Image 1 (cartoon, protein in one colour):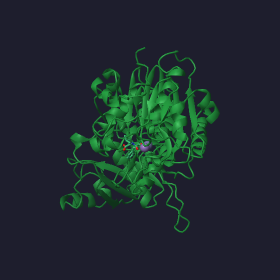
Image 2 (cartoon, rainbow, N blue to C red):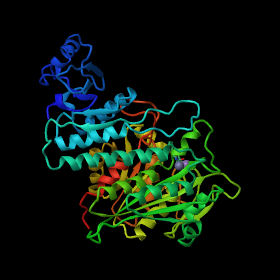
Image 3 (cartoon, rainbow, N blue to C red):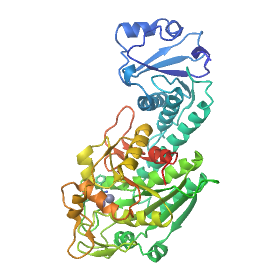
Image 4 (spheres, rainbow, N blue to C red):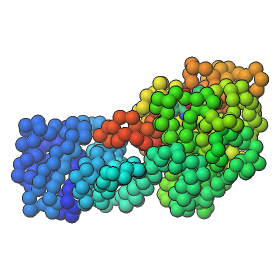
Length: 488
Ligand code: BES
Ligand code: MN
Ligand code: ZN
């Protein structure tokens, strides 16, 4: 279908540095030469995320066209297409435009470009849940269509659009959970909401209560939960597609601290409110399980999310206390604020017990990771390197930036304890690595990757393609991993 025949109010066209007014037959004419004029006067230079709106005449069915700057064509691809989709979607939403058509363009497979564009348009629909009673509710999302210039008759195209939709929606669901404050999203509420999200997609979910957690011997999870009057929960998600082979089984484990005060090793007041998102890894696992089921991944997948508050109550664990993990290993708690690794230790063990052959955990684990990689890139750790590299490739394609960090055995020395098998902290040097070394103790030698999202789960500054707030990082990576072929 020519662009002029698209039935929408607005057509959004990514525009690259080497595009000219005649790049699209009839488009410039339909705007009465406005595009040529804007390019000539350099009002619109196709710089990344610049917008140019033009009115179209009767030769076009859509009343308006928006060019959205895509920068250099040579740098275009799925990653920039996802971002352009977000920016285009947000621009349409801001202007309350109901029916939008988006035209994926750029280098790469047109089917993958379309999927990325749909992911972006869907991510633009995210509304941070609001408790405002005095302001009007934010504009609801527009409905949109994908108008393909190339690959429209490719049989994979419909699936790619559906896939982009599911991945974008699942990311948004994780963002909603991470945005919820600690007083509404208690461990029990988190478990109930995560279960209903996953259940609705056909995932079987068990929620273990404090007694069942105790029966499993999860002394690390129970230890962290002691300081709170809210009981802990352990969410267990199972995806077992008919006909899937017994192995591999992907095991996903997410940190579910619904609020992290630091416990007795309490955090400073400044910025502590941010610690409501310390369950972003757990939300990523729950929402990835949803996507995995809706996308009908071929592989068996188990997810588990230990959930608790980290509070300094009268029964809270104290520095120097020793906890016994479900695996049997003992831990000397040096700092109660290093609680994520404690609950994940029991979580990783449980994923193994349920039959996982490959482990991936995701957690807002260390401030040290934010120091090392900032807010752009998640830390990637694990073993063997062939497995870690595969996770990195998948994350790259999913639009979640990750970068590998070393796990040399010598780092383990920093965790040596006088009295227990090891300590839960290893001092300031290499803080994100020693945290990962701690987790490694609970992986039983299985292929394992750990993604530290302390810096990436929450956007502190708004970007054109990412508003302030929860990012949904990891959901698309974890979901896409279930389509890999792992050696067993
Ligand atoms: N949830 C925090 C990590 C964090 C910090 C996430 C900043 C997001 C932003 C974690 O539980 C924590 O407190 N880690 C400590 C570990 C230390 C006590 C060894 C940290 O990073 O300071
Ligand atoms: Mn902490
Ligand atoms: Zn924490």
